[in-house]
Image (cartoon, rainbow, N blue to C red; front, side, top):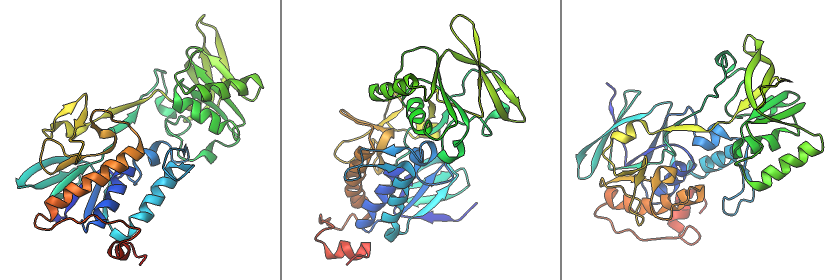
Length: 342
């Protein structure tokens, strides 16, 4: 059994919302440790679309998921948070008023005065398409996420799906692929209309192919694809040369142990008080995609707002005898000293 790690706050999840919460807590002299099931920081941004542009971060016209993660890490550097990656929180036990004992799959035990759950949709895994014999190709020439676009340069790429992920990666990879083919079971797409129009324009110009049907069989050896067989609604088979395939059939989100933490839930989302983002359990908060409340928008910027308000309430638990004076980083010398810019 490892020694107990004591900290002011334990943050469950090291995605953008969890990282920004470190910043807001740090301004209030609140120390944090973070636990994440992934082996790197950044959450879904870093895991699923590290090179995909994000356009709705205030003041930043365009930034990639990886770029946002790196910027947030730079921003919180003055507060020196501790990360525990590749492990999952298994239990939260109330041992004080409030004081929590938290355990992880790595055998670590934490004691903290508040817990912030910033776990996105929980642990997630891509849905596997119903293609017989796909397993030997996975992580070799069949990929469920694009972690580095350059890996697809000069290759024959088949993308399967009709949602935003399939369309976005079609548009991003088409310029660098040798030939790109989009496969969807019907000629009707769930993605953004603008993306659909751009894709159809590429097809009309001959810059890429669109196949209406389903992948019925894969060809190749030793994990390397050479072709995919596409069956249309009439049963006709079309063979498409293929070095790499990207199936986008959505994600299966699993809350895991969170569902056992005695929190008020609504359809696998955690209910919160919108003034503090505290759950029904005193001292436990939920921010980002994991929470729900009237008018909730699943946007990164919303999670940043939630983290800022959450930190104000956490201060009450960490420093119950200390009056909280609200300050602005633009005018407060003390805050600027904490950030190392004074």
